[in-house]
Length: 355
Image 1: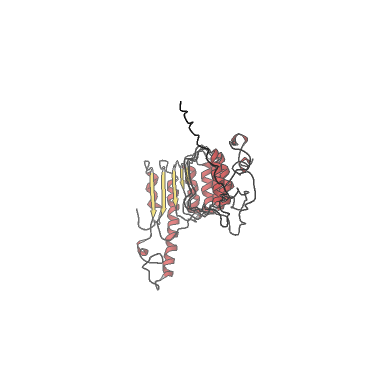
Image 2: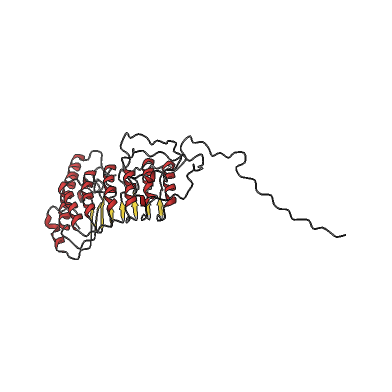
């Protein structure tokens, strides 16, 4: 435990010889000289020296990038470590973009028997993600990967999902707080007029499933009767940055992932409609957290229909999505007789009286 980032590789040299080290937690906090000062504090004065604070913050980030490089390099030779937690608990976000640190992180994933890795709030980007994916492809020990609250976009997410199609060890993936939504200025989702829910039709795309994985529909192929306030399933469109399609591919081929968290990731109906294809055939996922996204009733219908053929999912969290009827939707028609009249009550025969 140190209040300032270490600036020498000798500070981690002891890790090379710790043969029994199984877990390491590194919590990055603000240096003492900036606590209670600077822009992030409610007590900062309007005329404080913000430029010097910014300069110190840049030096602080640079020092931590170099420190993490030393840490990853030391851990690459440690064969006993199973759990590594690196958590950024500072007011200002870090950006782990140091090339040496990222490359050594990739090498660490290739060489160690690490089972749990948490890189929380380190400012990982799509460029950084490329090196993590390279390590995931050859890693055969990692069971939990938490890269929440970073700066990964749809580009990096697609790389992760594709890499995990052939991964047989990862069980938990947490991408919470990354911006995986559609690129800016992408066309809106087309509502179309498809007659068959894509939980049954789009799920049989050859690019996603092999013939042995195709689900057997257990429902009628006729147009389902939906309440008027629920729209028909939209035609899938590629305007989500490819996240939905890549996620569907991962869910279709991966047989070990049991928990997936993509909460607060700006996911839209287009993404939900696409990855529902994977949910229909997935046989391992038990917990799915897609809370606090931008999924409406359109995407929810696709997900619910896909789960008709899913026998493994136990927990689905959709809290914080606006699953309300679309604006200007027609009210639910009640008609003149919303319910069939009840059957007449049979009358008891009147006993005859004898004279």
